[in-house]
Image 1 (cartoon, rainbow over the protein chains, first blue to last red):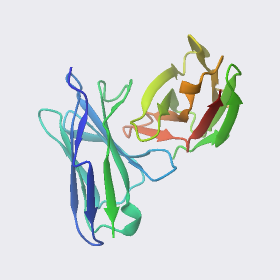
Image 2 (image 1 turned 180 degrees about the horizontal axis):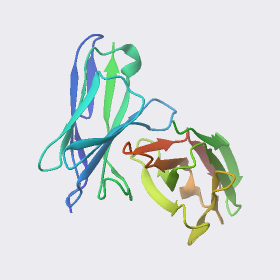
Image 3 (image 1 turned 90 degrees about the vertical axis):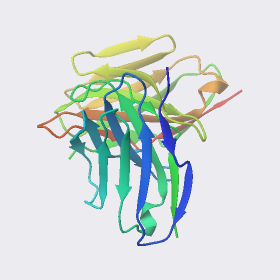
Image 4 (image 1 turned 135 degrees about the vertical axis):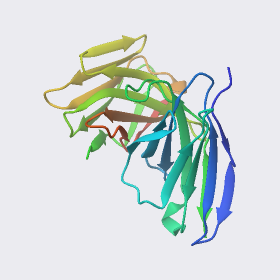
Length: 114
Length: 114
């Protein structure tokens, strides 16, 4: 069974740039959710994709967008990067969509915005 | 939207003692409450969860209680061991309407002293 993998693990961007983070879900899972975790804080829900459709969104501006592909892998795109976007971005996969169960997290992508 | 408050932010206990972490939530539509453990530099991992139709759930040394009326739920760890040292996050899953959302608390740093 393949776990959740994320890439890249670390990256540095400058303010105003755009970034794409990638996530491969665990085998058999059809739901992917993304979280932003600032240092010393709990994960903050960005959005969730179920069968290629966004079916949940947290309090993040539209410059945070995503995609889910037919193989259930996913991308998180962030445009017009701001300094406050510096954080660990976690992807989690699960099976269920509307009825959530255990989330399996990836190791995260640590983004630094200078 | 949902707001999850978690207390205490830090907790230090002696090995063998019990530890209790409490969370409150604001939205009565929340119906699933997981607890995640995150060791330093690692991904969050589910340790126990409870659904809104259950008042208590136990798994060996770990138990969770839920009071829907008061909108609070708690994690109880008995006979703590040094390997229990980590950050613990509570969360509430809200499936109100068609916008699904998982809201995490800010975390509790538990230190178990040998």
